[in-house]
Length: 248
Image 1 (tube, rainbow, N blue to C red):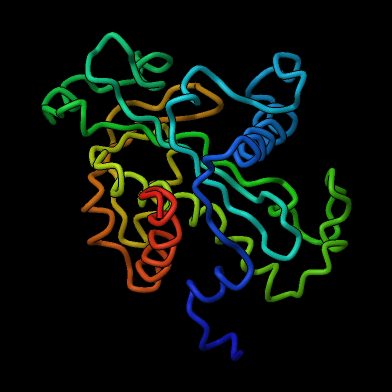
Image 2 (image 1 turned 90 degrees about the vertical axis):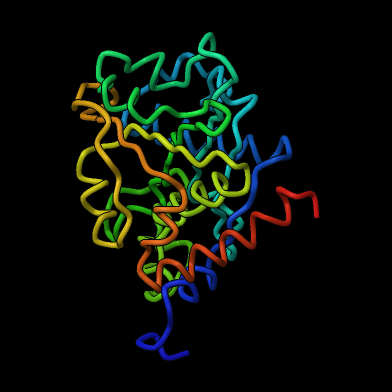
């Protein structure tokens, strides 16, 4: 296959698949990726709270989880979750509970959102084994080179985080949770804007697992404004997730 003529979707799907994590085994893989990234690598959460080496919280039981899996090795490469809002204000979303002081209440109030359409995207993580460059420190899986990946395959690793975001977008569409919030490092919305995906700032930058700010987007806006290559990957990921979500 001529790499110059290969689309983003083809490059990614040649080496990875995206799964709706519904089984106990799949969810365990999600929580283990999060533990390695959030506890061991970045220290966002205390590792001693998770002796089973799986990071989870009170929102995970009713969240929708997506898993990006490396086809050749079977390894979990990344994950993301969608947390739906409850029908009342007594059960806040994570950003409402932990980052309330950073919310632009005037902006959010003016949106006049029906909470049955509201969700938060969070816990987007890519395992360090798929982020480190050749020659860097060993991972818990050994040297990344030991996975015997081709150079073309390694170049697809940079798409894992993008695929995680697209998977979460697909889940907002499938679940009808089209008013989407996310706490993100400020550089991420600037990066996504280059691909046509425009988040609106919904709060100020605060310290929460590093610099984070609240952002808002409508699902249809994200889909409509994606550049063509990205939209092709989104369509493929949506198809992978839809069958599992609909029980097909």
